[in-house]
Length: 389
Image (cartoon, rainbow, N blue to C red; front, side, top):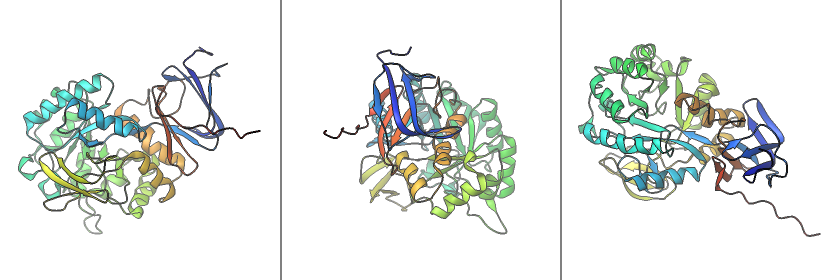
């Protein structure tokens, strides 16, 4: 109710709503949620000259803060979650990498507990059902064809928290696995694939709805053999993931995706590994050794890019300042679209009354200055000091 001790008014900022940007706007927080009306006598935070946008939603993330979602302890996973929260990601799906089936089932059980506790938004299985031709930073010896029975085993191990599987759907069992995932309400994502255009269309018709990091780990666009990229960009049923770190994609490729798919079909992701928010050095991604140098992660053997060290505040900043994507479109791609895909848009992904008070404060240059999750500051913005009279 208005005037409650846990009520807060964030005032003076540009507030990005689903309907557009409000100048000199106000966001009223009551407890853990965004309130519909004014809060009388509630403390006010002056955010003049800033932006307020919804908390970021990352649907593809392997770790951060020096900790791995793929192999770390529960405390390691929480370290990674906290690291990304400090960079604006208030809703996060934990992604695995290719491993033995029993190990992946065990990891699913561990991660599902953190979903149930509200720390994670779900589990994403990237591998082992991917193409050895486009394996990227996945151990080739552990790859396998998609088997609906094994897919079902991992769904069951995740106890209702499985949100997405990345599959090379052209492999034997791929189409059947897509249909199984669709039947269970789990996203089938096409990625790490060597599929033709026609095979990709078949997978979309079977129920696939996401392109895992579009352009990366798939055949390039060709004028005689258009491959998966053309099929994924042209189909309104597909949301395309993009890694906007300046390494995975040339800015023109990102702009091409926005132009052709539209902002309503883009999900900005990190594909982050342990070094995100931590620094250069030696790491492990599953069973594979990784060296991070100048913020770029590559396999020690083979030199393939091994995920990213990206955080979503950097992806947002690049999208607006370098790629010149309109702020409202970036907000849609980094918050609303992934929230809808994950089935949590009723709670997060936009600044609307009744939703969780998850938000990010950016300065005029789009640098992160504050993060709130469920009404509590993760990063508290510094208010301007009044000038002496």
